[in-house]
Image (cartoon, rainbow, N blue to C red):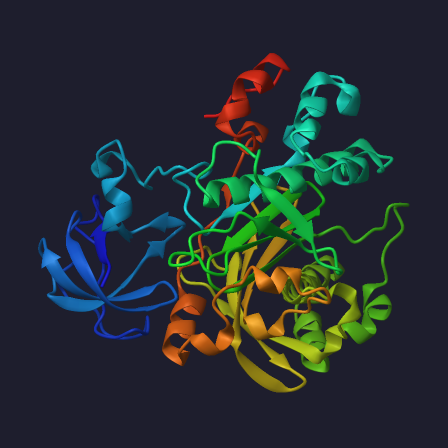
Length: 411
């Protein structure tokens, strides 16, 4: 079983240990010491049942992996790869892009923080555009009228390609082939990740407002959506969301929305959380707006380790029946301009793939997972979002050219 290292609690005499999985269960008087090493017995979401290997504290118990947005424990293998002493950090610094980034990515780019000289005609933008080798994809970027939309389109494509390169441990895009399903969902067609480590690796992307976001998974199907809390349309007119989207939410979901009133902005934020979840659900499936959204009802609970009201985990009831093979995690993005991002994890059997090309890249079918194994992947830790600069989307083999084009190097 995996070994974990305690990286939190340096200033508090260690981290709190409870007798049971529930946060309401009794806690031990003694804390688990900073730098202690423990063996994983069970992992449910962000709650770890451990057996102590090194250090001081209770020999066995339940602890949280994160609290207050900071890691309390990291896997021993990950900690060993770090170049600075763990005591020197509040949160371990790891390679978030590139050959050591792993298979599970949560990336976000703020387009408002990037204003390349010359706009879409400038050398930096054009250099990045040429990294996308498919001419039809480049044309789709330039087809947009407004520069903000061009930036979103470009960055989303670069995120997908950098996620593929990172998962494949490549430092360029040269041999990477990206295709789309009939429903326009991008996927890695060739080469594929190692079957023994990431048999079903897939990636999904979304953009709205100032954020472009990306999520990838090694075994489950990933879907992601970001929703901006803007209650007006492009003409500045207020959206009557209660009527316009009446048929998209269930009665229970509308009750939840109205419970956040009477402030319409608060209601719209609650509505947007449901909308983001439904979008993540259908994007994981691959059928988009063809799916009747009112048939998927979401239930939420606070996500432990985050400020109240900023993160939730949820499940979905499809046509009134709970679907245990799905899980959703939802975050409020940083900054003064509120956005909500939802990441969905779902089963292979839910994929809608008319041509079958995407499905062929998934080499471990649903029936080859035991219920325990699937639950383990579904409930495994869903990483926080790393906010990346534009330079992080450029593989190292191209970095010198990017700098010459006016870009800022990364790292």
